Length: 185
Image 1 (cartoon, rainbow, N blue to C red):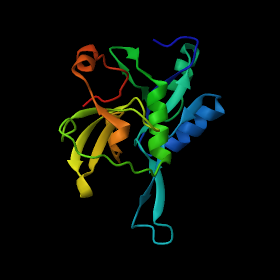
Image 2: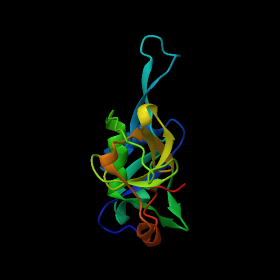
Image 3: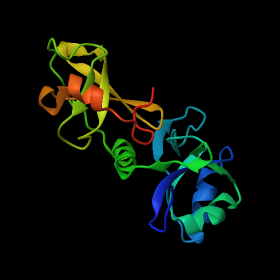
Image 4: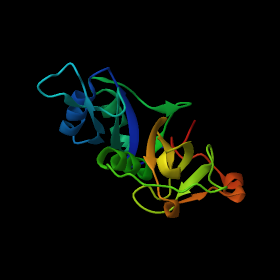
């Protein structure tokens, strides 16, 4: 539940209105974050690399309980993501993970072991993604693996070094409680 302390929330917008909604929210002095990805678009011959929203029809806003109405009534906003009439707060670590995915070109490598096989759940222990969980999704060249990390129900594949990962333990599985929108599959 939102309080007077601002929290990150996901805001759904009308299609292709993300940038305009972000501008309107900023003009209303509401902090927002619209993650973008550079994609090659063959339709544009002069400049084939186009910036597009990472999450089409969504952006993030940092709002307090007093800014809910203003956010909801901003032209172009469809709704603030909620569940059972309660606004879902997006943890800061998920916002930081999205920022990292947006800015990094980093490739990390992982050596195969019996504990880390395709489908195994892992915890990233070092680097930009420390603390996030992922799943080994496929073998790569030279005995390396690709790790899928899900944020906001979107999976990103990164390469990790073996020393930056460890398998999730049985005890960790028993203690699991879902946090925000991270790693829902």
